[in-house]
Length: 586
Image 1 (spheres, rainbow, N blue to C red):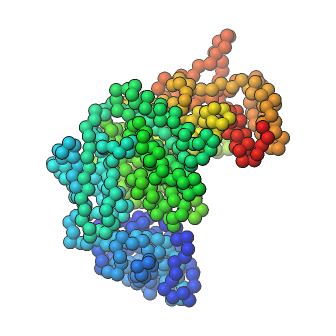
Image 2: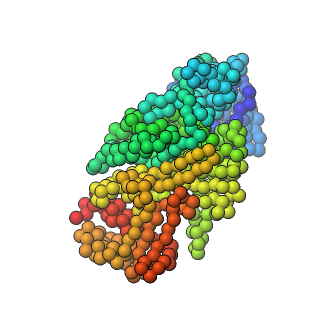
Image 3: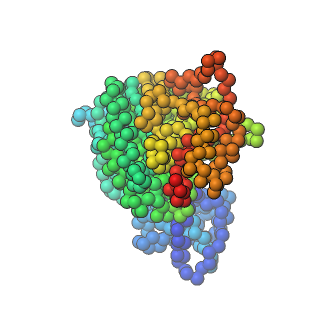
């Protein structure tokens, strides 16, 4: 069996593991050590661990409640060392790992050990059916290993069971059966013991999905707080989604784009991922979720364990499905450090291997809709102009795979504002590739409802979502503000009237008195007198039906781009925040 090592750097435990001999001193012994999330292999087989500085006589110490296991370093290379997987490991256990050298040791992190039984042909099998009839040529995956159903819909695989689930890649013309809004495309494994053989079946239903609709929302970030309560404010969104689904003949699907919850409020407000799942169950269309940075458990010890509750409650963090002629891909691009709640935006080598395998099943002419939480592209300021860029090395590796396809739409959240990124126009691709950064469903964290009667995002647009209209390979899209009509796509500010309001409103006068940066002159210094400010919510020339023309009685007016925050953000969001948290007089 070929073994693949992940090259993700895992953080150490929140507390250093206790060395075998307490008299040993902690020291820097090796560098650039890459522990995999999971070490899997047969007992007695050799295993290579990347890193520099290993020496003969070094010993890896694996510690857990079940006991300690020592693995002496057998051979040392320029960038790795070799050990033998011990029979003493308890398969499925997570171990604290240290390297011991003489009277010194170095803590390396945490990994799970899975012992593969070589003589087993498979330990996971099942059948993918529709009304009792097996469906052939359907891909099934456990997050790492893949299997394809035979002519009777049966599959089998030798799974390492690292992630604790298995899922089916829904083929075109089929959709999973549902538990309320939740598509049952994945199932939890009954055991992480690889010697335990189990059967997992999937039921799909036939759908006519060549033409279909998709609702893309992001950053619900429900916490069970605010007045009115944030989770109560989603009622309009639920109602709109239901009314829209009832008004069209095509099937409608929905995706979140991460941050369904707020990690620090899981305990404080008793609203975590299990509560979110129950809360969203009545959502009127099938709902597919994506893990965000706030959906990780801050009480865990590393990124893998921090995502364990998500995997148990909402399922795979990397998965795919087919709807009509489109292949949808969902990936986790958040590496989370629980102790600091810090995030590194990346794809690990394991994930890139998974993506490469998934795309190998997809024709190059198939439209791709790729969903993640953190945007894959960014703008950087050179000092004289804005320049487009990709975010990070591993993002570039993922994008290189996607650029082999004729059309790619990337949907992300995280930033709490709307932005459209034409990758080809920015000369970062020779193919049609677009990134849609979708605003937060809760806008500026749900609290602007109290001041202006609806939620406002960081860029001044109403909280909202994107609606995709897909027919075959044709993909059109539009922005929809929650509680706003379809044609509400821009806001106009007469800056003379804004100035008069700023100088007369008690809330803004008080705020500017204690914080001069909030005076009108400081906030809008770059806007000429008498200007009219247009905030076009989705400044995207490709968006269906979007056309911007401005004129007065004398004819068309000249338009200029302005890099300035919408006045409503300052008033409804920032002033409201000060009111709530600084007890600002009103």
